[in-house]
Each structure stands twice: as structure tokens, then as C-alpha cells.
Image 1 (tube, rainbow, N blue to C red):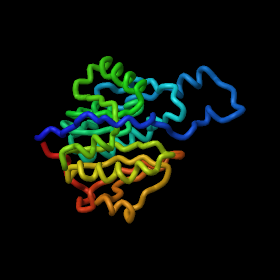
Image 2: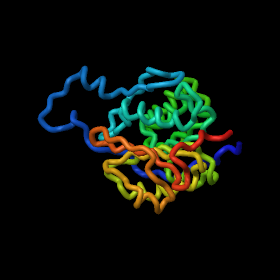
Image 3: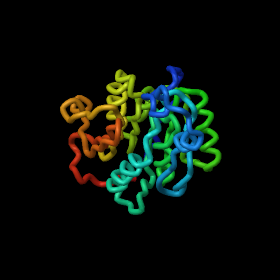
Image 4: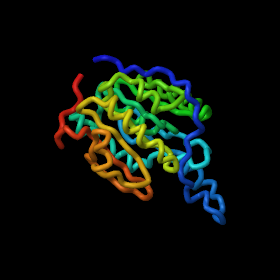
Amino acid sequence: MRTPDFPSSSSRPGPRVGPTGKAAKAGKPSNPQHDKRAHEVRIVGGQWKRTRLAVADKPGLRPTPDRVRETLFNWLASLAGAGGGELPGWHCVDAFAGTGALGLEAASRGAGLVLLCEQDADLVAQLQKTKAKLAAEAVRIERGNGVTALERAVPQSLHLVLLDPPFETPALYEPALRAAARALRPEGAVYLEAARRWNDDELAAFGLRVFRHLKAGAVHAHLLRAVDEGEAGAGPSA
């Protein structure tokens, strides 16, 4: 298999931001125990199952909830068809990595190569520490623009693209989807997390369609596939 081309990007946009959580609402006192739990997520499957990941104290940083990730990776495991929730040998890009929860979940489940793209220097440093702690050899970390990395990837080289852009920056969605569709293997999948539901009519412009959808609170989680793939598509080839 040809390895995807993941060149470094020189783009340095501002840090990833998301909607403010309940703890930030005015008039609510801080609870140290609640705050500690809110600033952690966990890997839910694979070799690093139950490993906790720190959520940096960044305004609005919005890691994908554990329950949503568990559902997403159940969907993906059914596509892989390998059993045990594994994604053996998959090549993946987490284009808006943040805490790295999505990309690290893929690596925990046997992905062969996972690129984590993040613009914020502090978050990149945290990702590097986590990679070292886990001895995550399949994980690469790039400080820069995840859309640019996708645009430079070898066409049809990726099994999985993870798109979780800042909710309040809707202009990122179209270029991210366009770049993801170009880089996606015919049997691959795109995960899209958004503040609203995307429909097939608007996704058709990128050659994508909704394969699965879940709403959890303010999060709309979509698993997208190429429009010409069957509902029960085969797992990725070697």
C-alpha cells in the first residue's frame, strides 16, 4: 500500500475554539471535583482502553464525548469487518485534533498510520507528551492546518478522515469536506461533527452521503461515505 503523503504545513491559523460549556455560564460556582472530571476524556476501546486524556484549559475546547466516540467506532468497526472493534492497518487523518481523542482512539484500535493536525502550540505539546506516554508509534503529530494536510495527501489514500472543526467557524466545513473527499479511498469513511445536521443534497457537491447519523446534545455526528458505495461496503483493502 502506498503511504499517504503528509507534508508539514506552514499555515498557522489561530487556536481551535468551540462553544462554551455549562461550566462557563455566568453565575455558576466552580466545583473542583466536577471541573477535574470535565477536563478529562478517555479512550474507549483497543489497546489503550480506559486511558484518560487531559483536556487543556482552553476556552471552548470541545473534545468529542466518550459516548459519541464509542458509537462512531462501533460504526467503523462494522465497516472494517475485522472483529474486536479493530481498524487494522487503516490510514487516518484527524484534521482538527485538539485533545487527540478521535485520532488516538483510531490508533488504539490498530490503525497503521494516524496523523494528528493541530494549530495551537500548547495542544501540540500535550499531544507529543501523550504520544510518548503511550509509545504510539503509528501516530504522527503536525502543527499546522489540517485542511492543507488533506489537500496535500495522495488522492484516494485514506481509510478514515476525522473532521471536528470549531462550531463557530462554519467556513471551514466546505474546504475540509472537499479535501477529505479527494483524499478518501473508495471504501473509506469521513467522520463529520457539527452543530447542525448535514443532508445528502448539500453533501452531494463533495461526492459524499450520510451513512450514519447521531445527535447527542448539541453535537451532530455523521459518518459519511462516497455516493457510489453500497450501504454494506466492504472493509478497507490492504
